[in-house]
Length: 458
Image 1: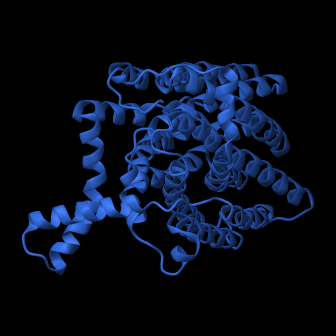
Image 2: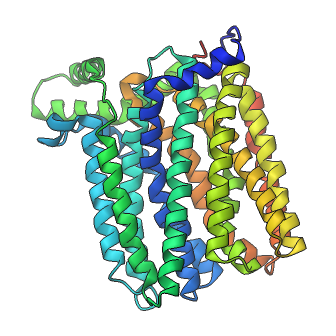
Image 3: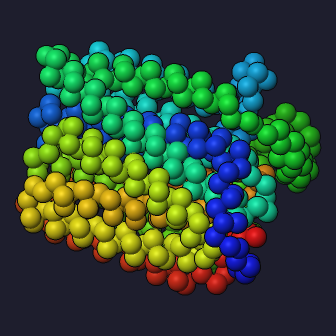
């Protein structure tokens, strides 16, 4: 790993004033908002319809599609959407199509009663998750391509801005959702959640308008390198015809990004990176999946959850994400990963105190502030870490692969979070202690590979 000279604090902070950081912020907002729909909003909707904790937890399996979006990421890197790509660009055209699918899904939710047709509600949620996961592939690629290959500090600052944007979309979207639902409920609308989803559809439209302000660089090297890879594979297949050309295209699209990743890092280090990425944020995912159910069972109202968990949490996240980005710039992204891992484990214990003490607004606020602080540090370090590992020839595919592996740990395993709380007979305190311990295996992986990771931290 390369060692670089530290800057002054002011010099480090100036990188945030680059116009590219504002574009990355907008991309983060677009990426984060759909999680409001299939995360807290869907969970609370099902909770208020009388469904069990286990059902809500297992419904969260729809997030698993984020763990597998790398399977179609190569297609997103290669396929151009007719007409639209020429008008708005390769990356932005894919984002627009996925936003439209999410908007149509929200309209469908408006027409469904979850108690009468839970399967349809989950199916529509799955469609939103697939569209959102596909959107993330191209959002992350477009974000990385805003910054040059060897601009390590700008990449880390961009990671911080992407996280700020993601949490802005997620937290403020949650404020809109929860307050709109409570207002409509008090106004006497029985289908207040369905109407809330229509209101959230307006946000989707605003996101599409904002996307037009994000510049899409024209990267010609990527297509040329991909074509060269196809020709090399085709030459090894012998005769040149439609079948060998198709086989070369498929092989280059799917295998090229994976071969590039293992060749760059070496087999053992590559496996170590994948193990760390898979395990790092599992504890946070277990906590996050059940947090809103926990708040509700403690007796907090939707508006209180909106104020403390969403509004206050957003401010905390923004501040500490920017500070986390500066820490990563000045100390190095690997050190930032260790620090954030310890912080995540420590702050999860605050929720144990809240569970054992009962409803307490001040303790709720403290737990949310410190949890968001730790999550901000962890997320910005994690995003910077995997962003600095990718090959620009396969930006979307390699980032999606790494992000998907991280999501796999968070979604597939965390789906059992509700069942774990039930198994513990509703002992939320012990549940949060377990989530704190979950971070340790990932830090062991990171310690083993820390001296051999190839990052550009100039």
